[in-house]
Length: 79
Ligand SMILES: [Zn+2]
Image (cartoon, rainbow, N blue to C red; front, side, top):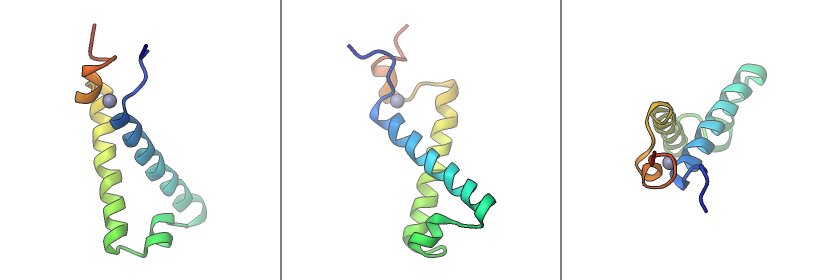
């Protein structure tokens, strides 16, 4: 039985938000922007990662007040 577990979409969103948060933490404490370090400073791929994290952050905020469409089909939307 599926018991209140988040769906794949929510997991990916959570992972991306986590990566973004870690990256900011590294930047604050060690002046290390891991995304820029790995992918280059504001290159196409780096921008794609930042963009994906931004979108994930927005989805995460929305999911605080509203279940994601994938979830509402499953556990958290019912009842
Ligand atoms: Zn979900």
